[in-house]
Structure formats: C-alpha cells, structure tokens
Image 1: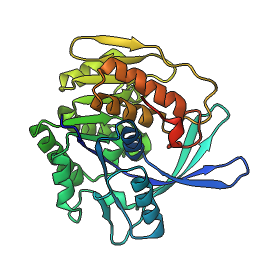
Image 2: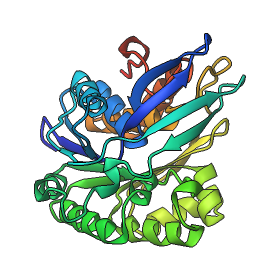
Image 3: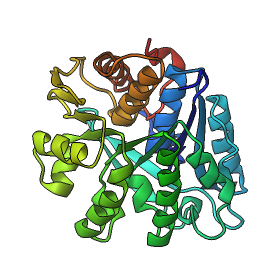
Image 4: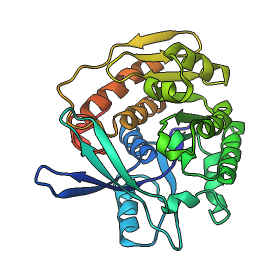
Length: 307
C-alpha cells in the first residue's frame, strides 16, 4: 500500500444532540461511518480519509462540512443535495453509560446517495480507494437500486486490489424486516476483506454463535474477522489463527456511544500503520476504552491517542 493510502468511508452523518446535566442539549455531528473516519484519521494521519455522503445547503450542513474538515477529512465526496438537509438524533444515556437514540432522519439528504442524481465521481473515488469502509447502517439508508450501484463501485475497488472493511451494525428499525437486511448484507459480503462486527449484532440478524460468524465471513472471502463482544472477549480470526483477547477493563462507562466505531477506526488505522492484526486489536481496544469515558460519539483529541 502506498505511503498516503486513500480511505473512503461511506454512510450518513447527522446532527447529534446530547442532553447535558443541566438539561440543555449539546450539539455535535456523528454517524457510525463518520465516527470511524474520524478515529481512523486520528490514528493514521498520513492517510487520505474521505467521507462519502450527502448533506444539504443549509447552516447545519455547513457545520457538518466544517466538522469534517476540522478532523482533516476530505470533504470533496460530500454531495450537496438541492432540497434536503441532514438528519438528527437525540442521545439518552442511563446511569450505566448505556445509550438509546431517537432519530429524525427519514427525509435526510443521505437517503438519496447513489440515486440517479448522485455524482458519478464519488463512485470512481470509491473504486480507486486503497480501503473502503461501510456498515449495515449504510446499506439500510439506500434503496435497492442505490445499493446495486454502490456494490458495483465496491466490486471495482476489489478489482483494483483495494480492501473493503464492513461492520454489520445491525439496527432493526432501519429495515422493513430481518429478511430484507439479510439479503442486503449477503450481497456485500463477497467483497469484504476485513470484517469488524459484534457478536450481539450477528446473533440478532443471523442467530450466529461467534464461531459461526467467523466461519461465514471466512467462507465469503474475509481475510481478517474481528468480533467484539461487549464485556466478553474480542475474537480475531486470520488465515492461520483464531485468538481471543480479554476485554480491557475500565471504570464505570460514562457514555458507550461510538465505542464500536472508535474501535473500528483505530483498528484500521493500526493496520494502515503496519501493525499486525493482533497488535491492532490491542490498539483498538485501548482507543475504545478511552472513548466510553467521555460523553458523545466523538471525543476531544487528547482522549484518543491510539499510538
């Protein structure tokens, strides 16, 4: 891989509103693949990291573009939708740091990604990437025809020997039914080389054990499979081994928002930096352990050193 690899993360970023202790709402910008892009860039500053999505032409969308630029992300793959704006969500965090969300995103600009109006140069950028990253949430926001167009771009990525990383990130509310989700996910798996998923999501969608999850990703061609398991062991499977890593113990989490996304970003950054997969797991776990001790999906830079 070249010294300044091109990484393209694909998905939706929204306005994030987190309730503070005084009852006021603290604004920010977040979304699973956007979060991963931020942590990846922080961990691998030499990489060119672009976020491919759609935003509007309003002040909130301008703020998102500035937030991306402030994190040194490329913004040239952000399409400005002529009539729509970004979605938003409210974060509710309980006393154990676990979060729940209320979404307002049914008419967000990102819903029109990879439709006829979406610029073709974004497909070409994905096709030329050294690494493309997407999630099950990415797939859930797209129409069937738009998913087909995205898959064609990802096929071109693989034809050019680029890698594709995927996190299932299964959220039932984003799908008409589980069968629709399984069909969409199954269509992307043949192109995936790095699977970064969670045991809980795989169980919810496929009914899998961790071993079955690993076998399924390996059968479809994944070269590295990382299965996170909340407080349980993280499991890494490569071509020649399966290893279990005890979870990094920390104090009582303050906010688990973005924990998996930060793990993914730090893992991919470590791999781009030349770390072997087992060391990359340790780097990623260290990053995620710091993120859950700070409110919000994206935490201030001093809290997320991955080196």
